[in-house]
Length: 153
Length: 153
Length: 153
Image (cartoon, each protein chain N blue to C red):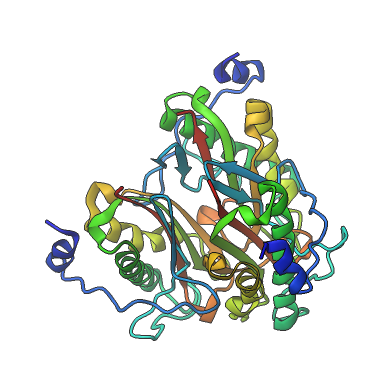
């Protein structure tokens, strides 16, 4: 089964490619590694989730925002690699969660992204990860994620 | 001298392998690089240090927490690489320090981890590093560290 | 035109090499990738910008601080690689912006670094990037940047 078929089976339609907010590009490939920029929860050019998890944003909304970040990242990787079937292994995910004071469940939020990777890629989606809380993110988004993917030679 | 012998000489016993808090794995190897997940100061399944450096946590306690993070990372790398003797070079350390408002000595905290690397690995332990302050970390831990290690071919 | 000639054309003089604040080194090369440490806006051993963007530090000052971080990083890469002409491609820039509550224009700040890369390196300077807000940084600097550069074989 191709990854596109797997996405269809999961009922997932990838969003259109996110646009960079600034003087950079969405990805760079070096050797067989593809490095992505930090991506927020974009949907049709909008950012449906705003605010801090633990205050205006619930953990469930944070999880959904992290999943939406990852959908955008999959769209980006598909374009960068030509096809999601070229993904040999997801290497690393670094996620920043805009956190209200006293909010310490960043891993639960990031699971929204990590679980999507495992659903889509199976074993190849198992990745190293860091989940970090921060006080502010661009455009008041609640989650921003960057990642490194190994492509097939 | 093997690294295990060096650890014994330093009186260091590596902690049991940390457990991931979420849907990810502790490390991924790609090529000869091993990427770790972000690891907190775990000890026998507990997190003995909690809170923000500069408020409930002193700089010395923060240093000890950073050192404990690195002990867990060494345990993880030993398992990931098969042996710590396979470490060719520590490449990069990225450390996040949960910081009370006005606390700006993140480098002093991170030195607890960096100095351990130099004690254990000598020249091979010299690494690039970033020390970053953040407002919140998972489980209210004061330090979280991820790293990249180059393994021998 | 060499990169040094390009810098002269832009009227840019690289600062002296920054000094590490702690038990680490400024860069590590592994394979053809050069990883830098996180670098602040240093100038002749001083840190002319201090505070949080959105409070004591304006966006324009933040942009200037990000540009100064990148000038230091160029100085570091020049030393690490032997020559800036050995840069094949800027791969990744990770920037942390010390942010006052409610400040969400981290990308505008980081553009001060990204635009310099494009001026100096042209197409080779196009990079993946993340811009992250944090509550505190070492020495109360407003910006800290780390990067990965691919060198020519």
